[in-house]
Amino acid sequence: MEDKALIFDIKRDCSEDGPGIRTTIFFKGCPLSCIWCQNPESKTKSPQLSFRAEACKPSECNVACVKVCESHCLSFVDILHVNHDQCIRCDRCFDVCPTKALEPVGYWVTLDELMYRISIDIPFFRSSDGGVTLSGGEATQQIPFIHRLLKALKKKGIHTAIETSGFFNYRRFKELVLPYLDLIYFDLKLIDDIKSKKYTGQSNQLIFDNFKSLIYEAEIPIIPRIPLIPGITTNKDNLKGIAEFLKKLSVDSATLLPYNPLWRDKLKRLDLESNYELSSLMSAEEIEACVEHFYS
Ligand code: SF4
Ligand code: SF4
Image (cartoon, rainbow, N blue to C red; front, side, top):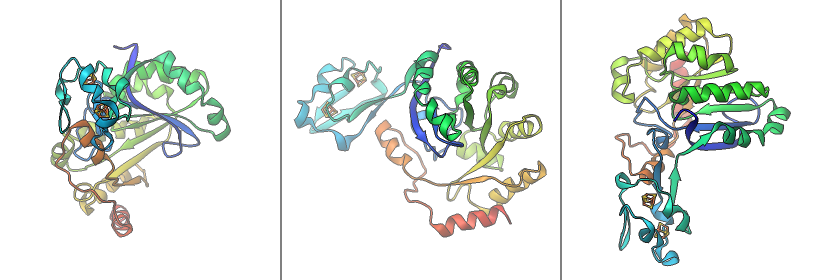
């Protein structure tokens, strides 16, 4: 469905996804399956259902959702039971749920709809030197659409950025995406390919090759970012190894992104599981140790 994009969120007034005030579009679908994925709702390329058990108040609705679901994914025995696999996303239950315990994750938008939403924020972009950031998931999974979106944004003189896992077809990225970008945030996670396959589900070869190609060929800023995932990416070998890779390309800095455990709540709502258990924030000392490893 190339004339529409599947997205799962539009965040306005963002200040962390690039310069100035930004609107960030989160695209659904990702070729990686990092076991710590901060946006697990981005992984699949289809709309999903989210259920927050703590928000469910059957006494307020007379269990209205069960009555409207013709796919029999909802049943009530003491509490509401949700069969996520059976959901066909007819969206009927969302309309009758008074507490928003049931919510849609992912919806299709046309370019015109998206540009209309974005255009509301143009005054904020102008006053702050901000713009639009494409995030995900992996936005390049929907390359024909983001090509048209970026072109439309540039036509309006809007600053554009992308946050990418680096796992894309370089030729297509160079032809359809790069000419319309002002800034790239590029994630580098694991220098060891065996660990990359184990923890992200993909080899790191394409990612590191793409980064190298962009450093040689792109004429815009490329900011490498390393997610700090305790026990996986935070060890000295990994951080030092990535620093050495960057140094060979004359890139002498990177953004280290401290682990945030909030994604674990999202997993439950989507009925997904992960082997990665850490549910606490990193301490200042742990973060400091990572900085030292990177610059050692
Ligand atoms: S979206 Fe439709 S199919 Fe899915 S749980 Fe709700 S009513 Fe049932
Ligand atoms: S999910 Fe919503 S509609 Fe269904 S029982 Fe809970 S509160 Fe009622």
